[in-house]
Structures are given as C-alpha cells and as structure tokens.
Image 1: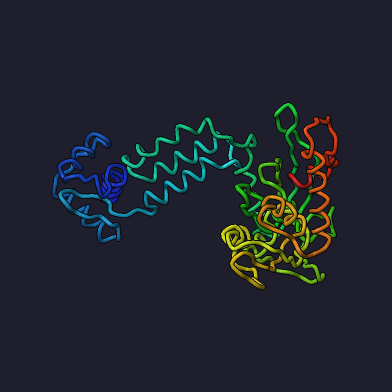
Image 2: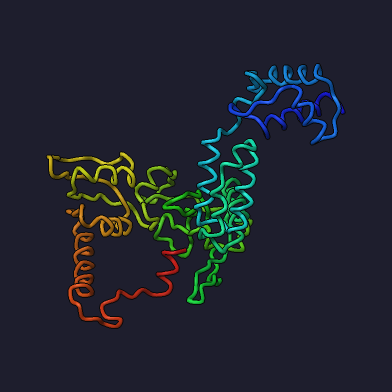
Length: 346
C-alpha cells in the first residue's frame, strides 16, 4: 500500500477513535492498522505519517497519546445539526435516520455513543413525503438556471394519508425555513396580483424543471425587485402572501423578546414607559392578524383600522363560542373554502 493510502487510513483511525479525551499511542495505531485494514507497518512509518498529516494542516496533537484535536465540525455543532434533523417535520423518518447516521459518522466513536437520543427517532413526527430532498435539489437547480418548475400539491385527508391535488407552474426564487417548515418563495401565474406566494416543500411532489424562463420578481410598484430574504421573512412571519403594510401596536416591555424573535430588530419604538410600548413595524396584514391573536394578552393593534376590525370580529366570534357553557354543534365556526385552505397550507 502506498504512503498516500497509509496516510488516509491513519487519519481515519484518528477521526474514528480519538478526541481530546481519547488518545492513541503509536503502538495502538499499529494494532488498528493491522486489525481494521490488515496493514503491516512499523512504528517509524506511523510517526512519519503523523508528521506528514500535521504538515498538511490537520490538527493532530500529542499528549500521552495522539489525537485529532479539531474537526470540520465540532461535537457541539454536530449535536446541534443532529437535533435539528431529529426534530424536523420536513423529512421522512427514513431520510432523517439516514442523514443522522451520516452526521454521526463525522464524529468520533465516543461522540457517536453519546448521541443515544437518536433512538427516539421512530417516536418523532416526520413527513410522509419521501421526495422532499430530491425536490429541494431540483428546485435549487431551477433557481440557479432561472427556469420555471411544475409540481403537484398535496394535502392530508381525514384518512390521515397524503393525497395529490392540483398542479402548479411557478417561478422559484428562494427556499427558506419558517416555524420549523421549509417553504418555496415563488411567483404563481395564477395569482398575478401577488408578487410572491409560498408553498410548503413537504406538500410538493413530482417536481420537474421546465424549459420556460422564470418570471423576474416584481415589486408592489410594478418594477423589477430583488428579494431581500431576511427582511421578507421578518415581514411574513407565517408565510402568508401579500404586501407588507405599516402596523402600529400597543404592547408591554416584557414583549420585547417576542418582538425580536419574530421581527428581528427592524422595528421602531415610538414611545415607551414602564408599562407600555408603542411600536411601529412592517408586516403582511394576514400574518400579523394571526400573530396578534397568538399574543392577544400582550398586544393591541392600533393601526391599520382594517386589521383592528378583523381582530374585533374574531374576538366576538370567539366570545360566541366560549362565552357560554352551552354546547353548540358547528355553531359560529368560520368556514373556509377548500381552495383557500389548500392555498394557505400549500
């Protein structure tokens, strides 16, 4: 076996078996080369290869034994990535398991043994859509090539299974994560009044790239627009379509963390005292309607009047449901057409 291959095998042994708390002597490395790879070398060869790997830039140190001191991804970084996959609703169970095993393989044997919570994988909720990684790859290519895509939307039925629904042709612009879900930000010719619409990637199947050139993003003023993703995400917190509007609210100082969590720091405090804040921000009106409902105990919308009226009407409907102990069957429920429901959950 040539020197290059010996280097790779010694590096693999260091990657698999060593870290700051687990070291190997040259003799132990010799034994592993023999037991794992049936390779016979002497101590001098091991040492020269260790020196060569160090010269190449690998962070290999000696302290009562040799170990790989740093990796492309540290244990804490790998643990964070594994947890994000473990709790992802976007991947199927098998996709999540495969990806976690790949991430575990990037750490040492001792790290892999520590990640026992991966055993919980089968108990977690994962998507039934097994095409999502393939779809993401195709969409990425389409964005790079500036071409439209075609896909079939899906929805869950009362049988708890996913069913295909309508076909869509869209101009893809970006993929983004919001509230634990992956979304495609795009333009749909069926909705020319909307600059951007959103579709959940785990609700998309049969994605294919078309020959047709994607439409250039157009802003509310009708001019060509460049999608500012961080700002766009902050202004569309629930991924509802529609232009952002100025919104003025009355809230409390204890709500600052929630405001920053959802909207970043791109909002203005118009006035403040110990008990309340008057804040101005920009957000999709539909998205802010649901956000204000979520934080109803700590937020009052002052402007725009249309949003304030919607919240008042919703509060009255909730009062009709919960304001009496009498049970009603189907009374007072807001009904939504199938097409509206599919559009918002796509």
